[in-house]
Length: 194
Length: 254
Image (tube, rainbow over all chains, first blue to last red; front, side, top):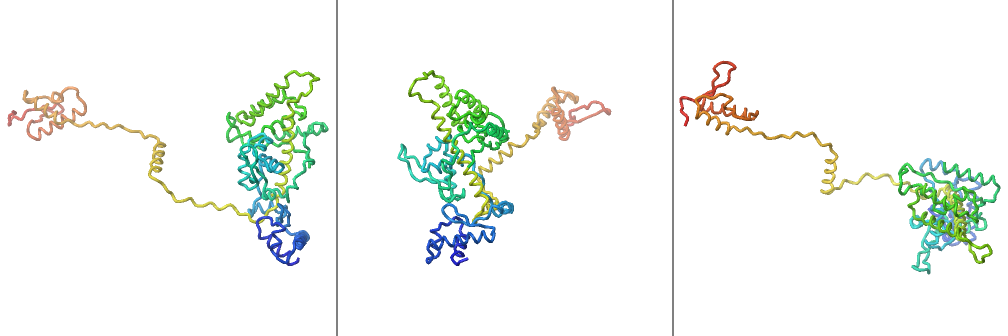
């Protein structure tokens, strides 16, 4: 590995959050953005080629050294670290609305989800997954929310463009599918309910 | 991207609150009225674009009732909308009438929109689950449990605590102790009065009327005291015969 790649490795190892390419460029005044990109690629290949227990992951607009998924269970069993607990359905739905509609106000979120959203919004804000990004011009100038870098980090996304595109979604229910499909669905429901 | 997975109903901790009425935890099973509505439609394999409002409104109301959601405002709001739609659909309309807007259009739009959000939510859930399998630095274990802080109490807390302890104690079996003072003085007076009139009196005379154990004791003590003072003599001519109380002859009473 080049000296620059080693420096990047040290920096990424020491950091508790993803570091952006711009941030990494400040480590060495002689290194250009292109140099950093090349060194990062070298580091990634180094981890992959030598089958390290960690890998270089691109997320939330930056880079981070993360353990490989295969080791998660053992590490957690030994209580050296814990996996982030699962998000609830209400949390995920609210995040979905905000991710696609941002900046978006509480009223619109509630209209789409059909339930009041005050509590969920507050807890998401406390966890740093969303933030107030402005105020609407509407009556009462309600707060507008948007997702944060931590949101991307939590979901392992590089940026919002990683979200599924609207045209990739099967928007409507599909009652016209083959009858067997529908039967499977119904069966799954019965199972879930029992 | 696969189709939205069937809504799995999260396990519901019903044991905590039981099946009583009130704000039941089964609310958690659906993330909202639209979720419940989608669930019903899916269960009946109905098409969103052509909802049989009357039927689905009835089922919605029934589900809300059965799940004990009838205290949750969000569900009641949807229930009232459905009932209103049901009424609107019942209104007669001419087939050739122009500009007739399907009253269900708004609901259909909302359901489709919500359906889309559900799908994204599932995608986000998968993404988060995948990301959670990779651990980053910076994990801080939860801090060890601290020893309890030193006890700080004020007087009133302590008194209240004492009250609580006392209130919790079973009441002990109490015996009422009644003071029954011996009335030696009046017994003495009574005997002296009797001896003024008579040379000798019997023990039973000395006791007077309404004899209680206290009177007997009082009289006995009075007799012994008087005998000690030399005011009278106590005689018993034969064994086991009644005691005779005689005035002390050597010293005339007066």
